[in-house]
View 1 (cartoon, one colour):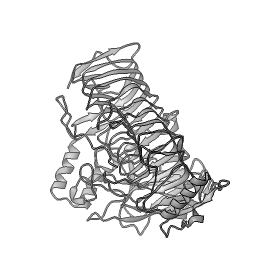
View 2: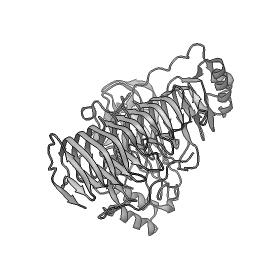
View 3: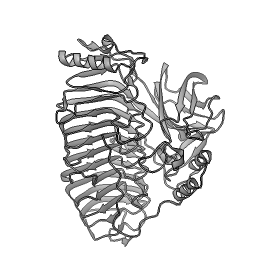
View 4: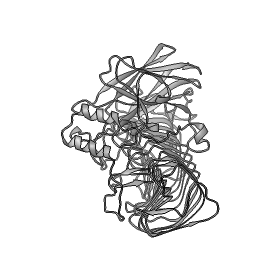
Length: 601
């Protein structure tokens, strides 16, 4: 399996924006042989941003994104004696990768952050950062968890899954410089229920040998384990080890074959099962006791369908976790949590995936799949990618955070994806590229998604004729989506990328693109960027822009579009930055902007 290459070919237009001064300074320091300790000092300092920080609370995001079973608490909004870093959006700084672009730094024993629970909880997930050692070796640390001043748990933290260096596709070698990808997640199921109103404190353990940054904590009420399905077979009956001491891959393969052949569900009881490699699935239901109870883990762990053109059919994977050991990006290795071709009415739901290269990398052609209520954290590449000739797929109500490339991507490489629905998902802090990206294909709907905090080489919503994709055609619907702090500086293209970004690189874009009732808050660069070759067929109806680091629209392509119902505040004049011969037709009522105010690059 190969992931996409990043585009690096020359682009058209003049007056490109410069790489941020801070980033150039970092590169010079690294070239001068800066120590890792000093490198981290630079990463922690950053440059405060004057932009407004918009919270991702229900009052702002109602009606968009995934329904969440947890309550998120941002560390900078808690009670703390630690140092708050940020806000900052400069690549290779700690704050730039944090949710909300701020985090709390524990620099010594006794530093803490505490939260008052608004709802009962018996589990928590912490997004944190720990720096590598001087030679790039992993550093382990501990967090103490206290409730009402009583120590109730200890949480292990480590740098082994973070801290990448160099340019794409990145390495784990400190000598390559440009350290980034700082954050990771750790989760724990408590032995008790903490009622609403409980004050929970996180502290840096005295045994920790490094500083620790806390970005946020998710508290949730995990239900009791699910019961074993009737008539089911159990993987334990085939020799699987729930203690995780023995490799259970062969036992799982035998159990899956037996369950498939007998048309009976396969039960994965509570436990931690080591699978050092992929297991193939076909015409089988695999049911766990819940993502906090039934955990598949190991080096190369993954559940894979058969390869196309003979895809697996009628697969149902649910209520379990898949946690790998991938700590670097190798685009030549198949290291997805769920992969292969899964069609014929297959379903993937209520699954937690972490520490793999790609959460779900699905290779077509195949037809008929639903992905629902999946949580994907800490991947080295995409959260989910629908790759090549995939049709009639729904991706919904899923949550993606800290992915190493696009959060959700549909990539029609050489064979068109079509009849794809991506709705009510949340993507937060992808470390590279876009929140939701559609690379070619036709009849695709991206609706009611929430995207926040894109970092570099991408925007929030992206349509592109790129990466050898079959060009976009037919109807492409982008409706009801919200992008918060979207867009970025692209150091390869040397321009700012909009929160909404259309890129006609390989071929002109000729499609019915309906950009409707879209909200863009606190965009880092332009709100909308049209770039590349000719772009036609874009209709904008109901666009709200509240704050942008650039213009409302930047035009770096030829073509035409119509706009109506646009409301804009806090943008950088001019309203339109025109770097090409592109025709904008303004219709109806548009507020807060001067549609005739255009300026060249």
